[in-house]
Length: 111
Image 1: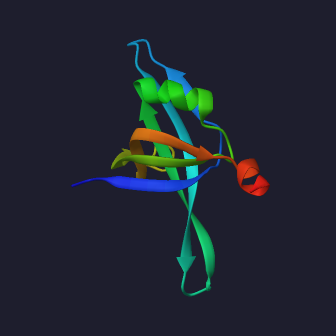
Image 2 (image 1 turned 135 degrees about the vertical axis):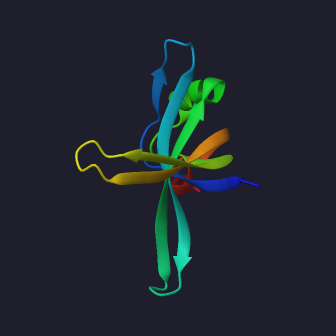
Protein backbone atom coordinates (compact mmCIF):
# COMPACT_ATOMS: atom_id res chain seq x y z
CA UNK A 1 0.00 0.00 0.00
CA UNK A 2 1.36 3.43 -0.95
CA UNK A 3 -0.34 6.02 1.26
CA UNK A 4 1.06 9.12 2.92
CA UNK A 5 -0.48 11.77 5.19
CA UNK A 6 1.52 14.92 5.96
CA UNK A 7 0.77 18.00 8.05
CA UNK A 8 3.08 20.95 7.58
CA UNK A 9 3.52 24.55 6.50
CA UNK A 10 3.60 25.61 2.86
CA UNK A 11 7.04 26.80 1.77
CA UNK A 12 5.97 28.56 -1.43
CA UNK A 13 2.71 29.53 -3.08
CA UNK A 14 1.19 26.83 -5.26
CA UNK A 15 2.15 27.20 -8.91
CA UNK A 16 -0.60 26.19 -11.31
CA UNK A 17 -0.16 24.93 -14.87
CA UNK A 18 -2.84 24.36 -17.51
CA UNK A 19 -2.28 21.77 -20.26
CA UNK A 20 -3.76 21.72 -23.76
CA UNK A 21 -5.50 18.45 -22.86
CA UNK A 22 -7.59 20.35 -20.29
CA UNK A 23 -5.71 18.91 -17.32
CA UNK A 24 -4.62 21.20 -14.50
CA UNK A 25 -1.65 20.63 -12.22
CA UNK A 26 -0.40 22.57 -9.21
CA UNK A 27 2.76 22.06 -7.23
CA UNK A 28 4.09 23.44 -3.98
CA UNK A 29 6.32 22.38 -1.11
CA UNK A 30 5.63 21.82 2.58
CA UNK A 31 7.90 21.61 5.60
CA UNK A 32 7.03 18.91 8.14
CA UNK A 33 8.70 19.15 11.55
CA UNK A 34 10.08 16.11 13.35
CA UNK A 35 12.18 15.57 16.44
CA UNK A 36 15.86 14.77 15.82
CA UNK A 37 17.24 12.70 18.70
CA UNK A 38 20.87 13.45 17.74
CA UNK A 39 20.54 17.23 17.88
CA UNK A 40 17.69 17.14 20.41
CA UNK A 41 15.74 19.70 18.40
CA UNK A 42 13.08 19.94 15.75
CA UNK A 43 14.16 19.75 12.12
CA UNK A 44 12.09 20.26 9.00
CA UNK A 45 11.76 17.71 6.22
CA UNK A 46 10.71 19.24 2.90
CA UNK A 47 8.25 17.54 0.55
CA UNK A 48 7.31 18.51 -3.00
CA UNK A 49 3.58 18.11 -3.65
CA UNK A 50 1.84 17.67 -7.01
CA UNK A 51 -1.93 17.85 -7.26
CA UNK A 52 -4.23 17.56 -10.27
CA UNK A 53 -7.61 18.75 -11.59
CA UNK A 54 -10.11 20.33 -9.16
CA UNK A 55 -7.74 20.02 -6.19
CA UNK A 56 -5.08 21.77 -8.31
CA UNK A 57 -7.42 24.69 -8.98
CA UNK A 58 -8.20 24.82 -5.24
CA UNK A 59 -4.47 24.82 -4.44
CA UNK A 60 -3.76 27.59 -6.93
CA UNK A 61 -6.36 29.77 -5.25
CA UNK A 62 -5.80 29.02 -1.55
CA UNK A 63 -2.44 27.30 -0.90
CA UNK A 64 -0.11 30.15 0.06
CA UNK A 65 3.28 30.35 1.77
CA UNK A 66 3.05 29.97 5.56
CA UNK A 67 -0.38 28.31 5.66
CA UNK A 68 -0.63 24.99 7.51
CA UNK A 69 -2.07 22.16 5.40
CA UNK A 70 -2.84 18.47 5.65
CA UNK A 71 -2.10 16.48 2.51
CA UNK A 72 -3.00 12.89 1.81
CA UNK A 73 -1.89 11.01 -1.25
CA UNK A 74 0.82 8.66 -2.51
CA UNK A 75 4.57 8.78 -2.97
CA UNK A 76 5.82 8.73 -6.56
CA UNK A 77 9.37 8.20 -7.79
CA UNK A 78 10.48 9.97 -10.96
CA UNK A 79 13.63 8.79 -12.81
CA UNK A 80 15.40 10.46 -15.70
CA UNK A 81 18.81 10.91 -17.32
CA UNK A 82 20.40 14.32 -16.77
CA UNK A 83 20.94 15.96 -20.18
CA UNK A 84 24.06 17.83 -19.02
CA UNK A 85 25.95 15.17 -17.06
CA UNK A 86 24.36 12.06 -18.60
CA UNK A 87 23.92 10.67 -15.09
CA UNK A 88 20.83 8.95 -13.78
CA UNK A 89 18.67 11.14 -11.55
CA UNK A 90 15.65 10.49 -9.36
CA UNK A 91 13.32 12.34 -7.04
CA UNK A 92 10.44 11.47 -4.81
CA UNK A 93 7.30 13.57 -4.54
CA UNK A 94 3.84 13.30 -3.08
CA UNK A 95 0.92 13.17 -5.50
CA UNK A 96 -1.94 14.55 -3.42
CA UNK A 97 -5.51 13.27 -3.46
CA UNK A 98 -6.79 15.80 -0.92
CA UNK A 99 -5.56 19.05 0.59
CA UNK A 100 -7.05 20.56 3.74
CA UNK A 101 -6.27 24.08 4.94
CA UNK A 102 -5.51 24.15 8.66
CA UNK A 103 -4.50 27.77 9.25
CA UNK A 104 -1.80 30.36 8.73
CA UNK A 105 1.18 31.44 10.84
CA UNK A 106 -0.70 34.64 11.63
CA UNK A 107 -3.63 32.60 12.98
CA UNK A 108 -1.25 30.71 15.29
CA UNK A 109 0.38 33.96 16.54
CA UNK A 110 -3.02 35.42 17.48
CA UNK A 111 -3.84 32.42 19.68
